[in-house]
Length: 437
Image (cartoon, helix red, strand yellow):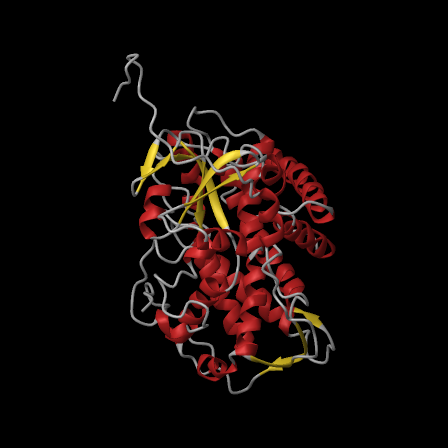
């Protein structure tokens, strides 16, 4: 459509929001977008972030709209603080079109093709069992920290960059710091920046060494990857992408602490899970991912003037997909603030409904391909926990929704963990999928 001057007509916009929500986001955390939604009766919510017109969407249709590259682009969408802490400069998260698809195929080949996830889950089980063998008699085990070390050891061994024993804990702290400090100002953020710079430098050196050999480890595959232009990744960008395999795997320690928290609060599920109820184990894992706060939202930039259910979205506006809000939307979930694994016992789950780590097609779109790893690894951790008996000493288990990413304040402390002789480890394959009811 063209205007009277012969130029393309600009769409008629709803009133541009005057209120900037940046400070409220920092202070409200996960409650920020749900609070914003309560103030609107329309199909989207409007605000400003860092002075830019911002719209927020939620729901399965919104997921499909958001992950359509004709609607929303990623280039220029992530702010510098997120690039310098969580994902890294030049990461796959910042690409669009063919460049994104070719780079994404690197992660698909590592995480979704073949038995990569199965091998990693097996390593997590083995390292968990090794660590748990040292826990009997210990008066204090901070599960968040212990699991971070277990996952670091397992994923680095899987990737082909195993650290020395005395390097596991420092590396785990750095990988955790990158996630812990991306969304906040202050000391946590600066620790995240320092951790990323330190580990990118370390891995860039390893990448150069791996290019000289003919290994087939995931790290070697990353080192030899060629982008859409046919040029190999430079060592620093390869290090960024290798960290984007290691870091999200170790971030499952957040879900591990939440799983322990859920087993403690709703302990009635422990006995049937320990007895080998495979369906309940998988449903429990999915409900942990739905119920507890992880990623609050994901964002992009409107690629052109758009319309969402009759509401205009101007080109260049920030577009947010409300993940936490969608996973707790009473229009999508029955009693969304009630922890209930049984909602996942009816069959395959709609892929654009449950979105704790985003939505879309993980093979071609921007959906995290590591979601399969999260589910498989968390299943092993849930099994590991229900196969133990342990004491839960007095501690601060509160989970503040103001803190992003949220976690139990204590990290979830257990004591004198020992094997439960009545527990069994199920060997049956996990169901193909779960559907909420």
